[in-house]
Figure 1 (tube, rainbow, N blue to C red):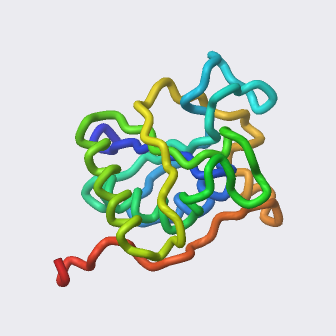
Figure 2: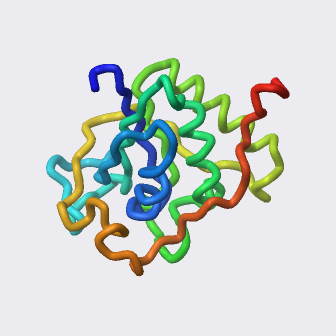
Length: 169
């Protein structure tokens, strides 16, 4: 597991994002939590400024940070500021929490690709934020849609990949 990497993204309610990422090729684990806010030990009832985020543990020999971001932009609407579906507020913002200058560069590149694709009618509002401490959410939020298969989600695959296929590059 020491060769695995982690990525941190937020795009609305963390349940739906986790459900879709958990089955992606190369993804080894997912955990929902809070990131980017003002308080330590945030809870669902008290997480000012934190986004509902997911920690994605992945095998870089099977997928890349760029491919994770590509999928991220396919399963939520990154053009709605602080909103996904019925959920509103900064907790539901679209954000990429980068851990290095290289991840930030890749995120900026993918945002350009998504904006230039014309698939979304408006420009991406995703914030790029340096990763701070990730706080795991309460146990009842982990694997929520596995435990509650009829639970609410506004996440679904909307588009094919924004990235060019290798043979077209």
